[in-house]
Image 1 (cartoon, rainbow, N blue to C red):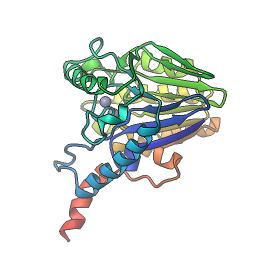
Image 2 (spheres, rainbow, N blue to C red):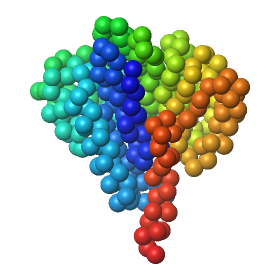
Image 3 (cartoon, rainbow, N blue to C red):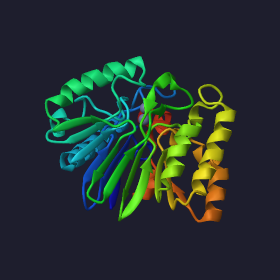
Length: 290
Ligand SMILES: [Zn+2]
Ligand SMILES: [Zn+2]
């Protein structure tokens, strides 16, 4: 099984675009990327925009080769309605999507309807992912029930994905922002994957959209994942938007060491430097003024 983490926050854009090739099937989860509209009161810097275009090209190149595409929810860093990724690339694909009208908030429902209209012209088959199981030869793809996008459902729901073949196993959590909630955690632990690709806690909003109590729950849950038999945990996306993310999860890192479980960002997993550009936004503008 070949796993490529194509675009992630640790690689400079908001995304968790993941490409997986097994003996049986080529899968692309969430072929999209976006930028923080505003950070430190500033719009995206030119360097971030260049990085977005660079990684969108990488995503598009892989989407072209994929047979099965999974859309876990309808935020622009997870689905792309022909903004940067040409919609024609859905031609001939089997697409599993988060249910477009059930367990979804209004904004995502509108986006889902628009996206569906677009891909219907190209996709070979479109199916609802929620609670579904797909078998392709020796590869089994299992989807979770819809779980809240974060600590509550204000931002809607996401689908977690589990993939297992004779070659290995993984879980992709999509935007759980923790995980803080019991049902988000349950799917991960029950699937017992070797690799867990997790959207870590939303600590860059600690004290307002994410409470200290939420952080404690996320740490407790991440420790449960560490001791569940996993070999490697990728913690990325919302977590690394916090410049102090390493300290925030130090308890998890210490715990993981005792279990010999690797915890790393997508960039580190891919052997690349961690480069969370939105955290450096002030700096990027500062350098330019000199
Ligand atoms: Zn999202
Ligand atoms: Zn996201």
